[in-house]
Length: 294
Image 1 (tube, rainbow, N blue to C red):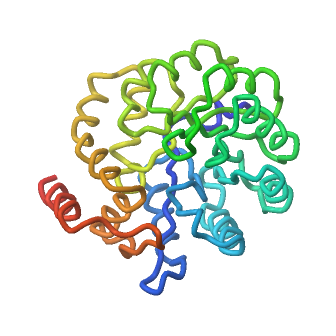
Image 2 (tube, rainbow, N blue to C red; image 1 turned 90 degrees about the vertical axis):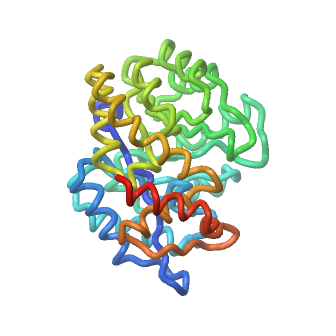
């Protein structure tokens, strides 16, 4: 079965909860996984950027992967983030991480190096050759410093067998439309921009890997499911209630916004690892006001 059939709908890019001493709070992570699955998300994405992976050690990442598989217990699919800007090191991770229970690997385009389009292509080709699971490309130029152009995505989709889809977070609907127009039929395309999911659903995306779903899994998931059914009148009614959420989530940084929401919902402590810091008091107050008025 193709990833396009396995991963329709909403995947949640799960945060990594920390205790006050900045140790991983596995109890809170378990509660958050249950909260999302109970409220209908279609799959869990572990170790995405929202999980603060740049500040996690390799040992911590392995612990999170194993814990997540155990907690999910096959209730929904799990996608694991494995990426970086050193191709050889990412290949080592793909060969040694416990990925047997994952349906796919999400791998962000190399950051900081700013490779050419050919360099991006060769990087992903090397990963796909080594990976025991299908690769989902992740184009997020706002973080990596280099856009993976639609032509490169389509070339990878057509020429590299173990490339199964893309999380497209270029913040460009025209680029998303080009990928959707030219993709192979079984190639998964999901959004990585929560605020653009509504219009991108109208363009034909298969779903989203979402930050907002951490804290609003039912509402956000219902909106996506309605959009996949082409019921945009009903989907818009839900999306309209979430527009302010999208702004608050990303106004300062991610995952500070989503962690503030989750803290106010009583699910996690509001703790991040440097260089990330919690939201400013003013924005946090806006989150409290939003939740009190729902």
